[in-house]
Every structure is written in C-alpha cells, then in structure tokens.
Image 1 (cartoon, rainbow over the protein chains, first blue to last red):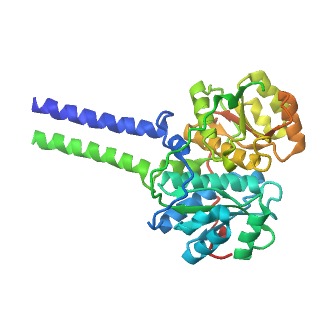
Image 2: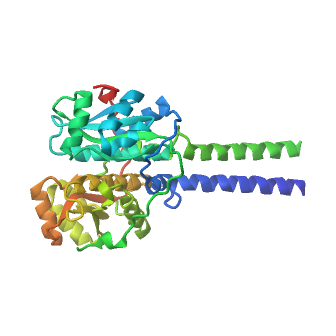
Image 3: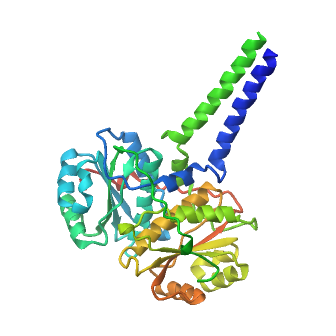
Length: 196
Length: 196
C-alpha cells in the first residue's frame, strides 16, 4: 500500500515534468510566443540595478537580428551613467522616461555598411532587445529617433556621433514599478488569404 | 529501505522538474533568448504541411509588435495556394524559394495609417514572425521587397494591391529539409559605453 502511494507520487511528479518540457517545445504554452504576446511598453522603472550579465544578454540578442545582405550595420550605445541619462532625458522629450531609467541602449546604424536598409535591420535589432528584456522581466520601450531630424540632432550632438552613424531608437531600461498589461492588438480584419 | 529508495526517486524527479521551470524564467537557459540566438534564414523546405493553428500563432505574434504612435499599420497576406507560390516565386527572383515553400506570409503596411513609420513597424512584425516560426521549428526567411521598387511592383501587381498598401517583406515558410546552424554575429567592437 505504501509502495503504491509513493509510486503514484513518482508518476504524478514525472508527468508534470514531461508536460513542462512539452511546454518548451510545443505550440501551446510556447515560452517564446508567450514573450512575444506579453511584451509591452514600460515607461516607469524602479531603482533596482540591471546587472551587467542582463545587459550582455540584451546585446547578444540585439546582434542576432537578420540584416539585409548580411551587412550587420548596427552599433549599440549602452548608457549606464546616471547624469547622462538625466541630461538626455531632459533634452529628448520623446524619451523623458530616461530620467527614471536604470540604463538605456541606443540603437544606431552605420550608413556606410547599409545606406538603404540600416533602419529596417536596426528595427529588427530593437525588437530583439525588447523581447529579450520582456523575457528577463526588464521593462523597456522603443522611443523613436529616426525618422525625426530634430530628435536625431539631439542624440548625435550629445554623443558627437560621426556623420555615417544614424540613430534609430533610444530604449530606456529598468525593472517595472507596477504590473503592466500587454494590449491585445489581434485584428482578424488585417488578414488576407491568397488574395487582397 | 524500500521507502528510502522510492523517496530518493521522488526527490530526483521533482528536482529535474524545478530545474526545468527555472529554465523558463531565469536568464541562463531562457527559452526566448535561445530562440532569438537560434533564429536563422531557412531557404529549403520539406513537403510537410504547416497547420492552420501554426499559421494562426504566427499571425498573433505578428500583430503583437509595437508600432509608432500605436497606429498598427500592418496588413498580412497569407499565401497557401501552391500555384500562387509557384507563380510569385518565378517572378520574384529574391524570393524564388517560394516555389519550395509550404506557405508564405507577405507583410504589408498601410501608408494612410503611418506614412513615415510603417516600414519600421512592419520590420518589428516581420521579426516577430521569424522568431515565432523558429520557436515552432518552422523555417522562414525575410526576403526584402521594400525599398526595392521593382520587387514592390511585382507583388503589388500580383495581388492588385491598393496604392496605399506597401509591401515590406515576403516570408516563405516551411519545415526545414536539413539542420540549419545560426551565425554567431556577436561583435564586441559594436558596443559603446556611455560615449562613442
């Protein structure tokens, strides 16, 4: 009887483990899909420090993006200096939440590597960073710099960027202060099958 | 003695389950990061059918992308008609692998919703589709249409797209024929800390 009880326990524990593994591989409960659907723009951050390891993971994710003709035109500017975050957040109104951010990544493109596609490649880079951040519980938001000349001038001047380095986005980063809920943006009317 | 043996078994099974859960949440072994780093361009596909459920997951992932001023300018054209895949693959040399694809998703943007950012928003949409596909074991590749006028003309004419609907990318989809290895594109020289 005791043997039966413990064996039942073993079987139940084993089954929950199998279902956990299935979650990682299958379509239902797929953790990557969950991250994609859970990603949201987070604009308020706690004082909790983002580790160097976490930033390193975001940068690895960034450079795993595809690029047109494999030109890899990205350059990544990591801002951890608090006075710099304050200063840039003060000048760049679209990214004023930098003043509360723990760190930031500024996604740039080198036009000498890809003059006509750097902004598309760098959009994929930005999306990779946002998804990696979401998967690590880090709040982030894509604040657009390109295609706005006034914003681009502010960032370029702040960092004295060379003329061939263009800024796509400033991504403030920090652990969220409150629970943020993702928007459900699915709209079946946007899907077309085999014809427009 | 028997009790000890079975309890040891329970503890081992439970621990392997805990480590499995940790994999889903922690930074090391984070499944989303793994998907991002494992994504690769797949250009050869088997005849295996992609299910409607899988396509539905790709479309949900697509529309979870962020967009400038929340304009959501995306439109998604799903191609499952084999003769259509053949025809378009024949005309569009950059996407000739459509002829072997099981299905395709064509990512379009509505310029009346976002004239200056639709191509950036749709790049995030495309990256979401590529990552969702990778996480489901489906091969995919971003074949650029924008910013090439000749390619855009071919797709627009094929589907008689309205003038305000622009095509960013054609994504052929299919289960991979062979194991594809991702490129390691990490380059520490592209990282800048607090200054250029």
